[in-house]
Length: 314
Image (tube, rainbow, N blue to C red; front, side, top):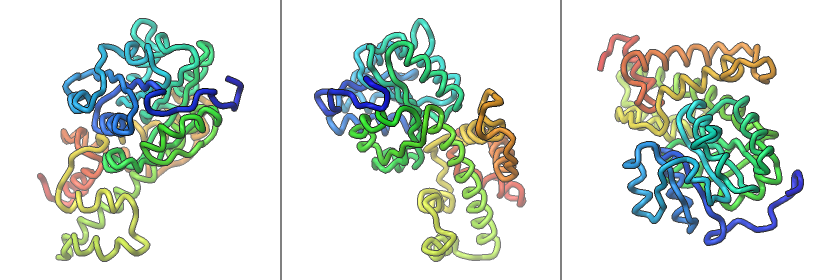
């Protein structure tokens, strides 16, 4: 494959073999979308029971990341932390990169470290493969409905070639070279964290003022205060539905990467040295959630910290 070119064999159901690593809330929903679109999917889940739904849909469960990659044309990862990405892709014994056929493509949808994305891309090229960092935004609703925003970094031609798969999941935008997708997701999380903090404080204030909170949310959703975050999380906050799309503890990780300019703190990181007061405050509040034992709640659970600060305890 020439730099910037496309694969000669177009992607399509019955043609393209997909490997999938990770069957959490987001990963399972995304893999189910590809299976429903007719793709053959081989799934590795560290906890196999989490993939039971995928098995019922016709996916094949395999015992290791390497087995998910062994016959894949495209392998997706959607795991928890950069350390999980490193283990799943780069472990010399069980990692996917050692097993994926030459010319295969790794697509990491985990919210991870831009420097690690570049490391994976370089290692893939040595093996005659390609890697795209493609984290997503849109939560569990977007994953189920196929409306995710996909932030793709890597070779632009490879990203274009992946379009049929991405279209089953949402809308992909090429953000730049390897690592750009992850940097975009960090910026996205800074935006989401600040929005959820404002929404949490607004709901607590509205309730303390005696307002009907659902009516308040419905009234302002069409104005300047309205947002996609309000659409996804506002009613959940009001109804105290803290089921996770993404865990609150992942917000600690994502915001921390922004605050450090990348998880490894490397001097080359584009975000290094940027003053992020709002992100720092949001990370401290999410750390408070974790300290309160609520790290496995969804990010909308941030409202519980604001409530505690105002004297209300669950």
